[in-house]
Length: 329
Image (cartoon, rainbow, N blue to C red; front, side, top):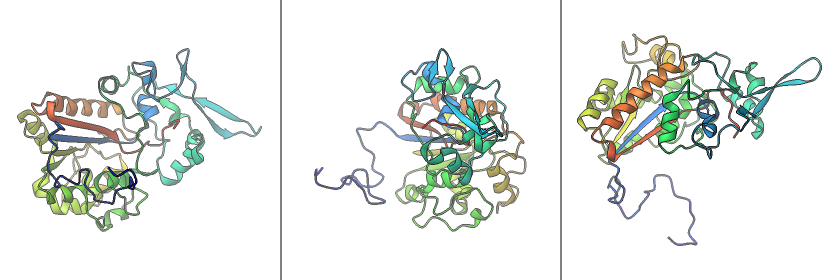
């Protein structure tokens, strides 16, 4: 590479300009990519105890004598003093409903980088709670078995629709909230990752549990419903048969209690889609019981690991945003 050349790439440029788009790199033994995006938990909330449980170098919570030292001030009382609330181990997998990841709430929590507005914004210590290996054994096993991106952040400091649009299109094209009206937005001006994959003959599928998350960009459903949007049962079959496509997006159950599930079902142009949504599902969004999501993720990832395609598979397991939960970074 020319050392005087700019390190910036133009949008749509190839990772290796000498290789045609869609051509495999013989030095990279990956034939399948599986992407699982869950809902609404920060690193410190989900895996904050990891430094004390197997990964001392992980950038999670700070512990001293077994207790987390991270804290946030609450609202200022009549005496002008704000009580401080330390990060604390959660007692169960049920979630309260005080947390918010709206645009305004998230910016209040970040507070210009001070990361001290979580309790004040929620009016509750809920954002300071974190899960332990006892409550989330599979998540901690996963983190202790594979590489962990402990400094991964959502694409936009706001809700689900914009962040899932970034996953699918590299842009939220102006959207900052999960709203009913956003489902009427036009498709992204430069298309989606699915359009590019299809253009270059790279096989892909979006496997869904109850409602496909690709509906946050409705054009994806309109264009690919018959050929590429498939129920989770087909993912399990393809894992067992070793016939996974090159790229798989696997969606947890969005459920009737989540904003995503409610909006997508109520405003779906696909008649009957999602009518049988369960009140509690597997996406882990508050106020769901995260044990449902833990179990769903275990089942899905177990099928991937047991697949004959596993030695040639890259699994990416991520969250769309922090969900209003504290993170020190």
